[in-house]
Length: 388
Image (cartoon, rainbow, N blue to C red; front, side, top):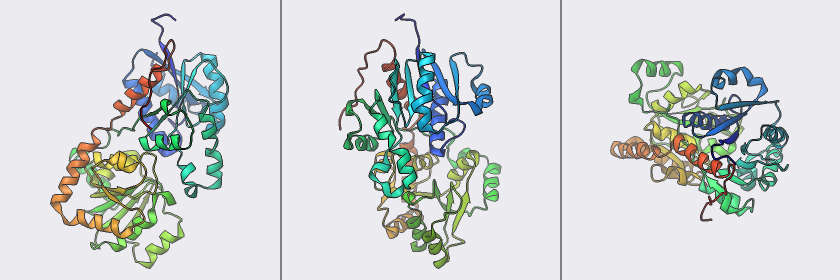
């Protein structure tokens, strides 16, 4: 190989314009940071054909970015079939797949970014349809040259289920977008607009995320009823009002209609400010592969209360209050403690800001590039993840 030849790195970027909310957010930050950190490589982006116009507008004038437009298929079929043949045609050196790789043989190295395999250990939180769709991820992973995942907790799960050689499972923590910032960073007019647009109370608890059973909305809502402070409201953003009959019955039975407010979908530009306006952020999820929303709240200077399970202690360190997600009273007590003790609140706020500073997309993409380039042309991969 010519020493001046640049590595041809390909990235499954089909979610950049349209995809699952969390996957789309992560992918956007990775791609945007890759372009900021442009180094000695050529970048090939797999993009859905339907987004050709948007892709050309964003990347069309970048000579080191090569756009590969692929027909729309479900991610599983697209990755197994289409991306493989395009990778061969364009003679790329490395492909970073999202969740599913391919079993078909090729001259390029296959890296697969597996966000989580929670469905293996927590099938009760997934529908049969979801479980059947996710299950091939496990078998296909065995054909990869390496796996990249998002936490040591998730790496341990992959190892426990004998999914891959532990030496070639790499952990890359997510970063936090620079768009998240403290309330003092905004002008008063913008903040007043957010309060008026969403009819926000002066002081409120915030939850951001999906409204499924795994996220533990039932116990979160129940904690509002159990709090000593009966004036503070809970704002829930990220989906329309839950159709969980137990949650709705709990709200009605305890007269919480005016204290539990569902905002539905909130656009990103408003969401950044909503985080900053909140007083406490609660995330009592039963199971997470990473858990980015608490870190986003921390970056905004908001004290955080999270579950003591799965990856959340790894991600939040000593900067969060931990609760048993089955214990609504414990969650209520932690909220009351932050509300009643100003010195304790200030201490948790300072911890949150300091802790969140370590999670940047620059760090994440530096690690991703190191891994991808180590599998590039003429390289004998010497990277190995230590430990179990």
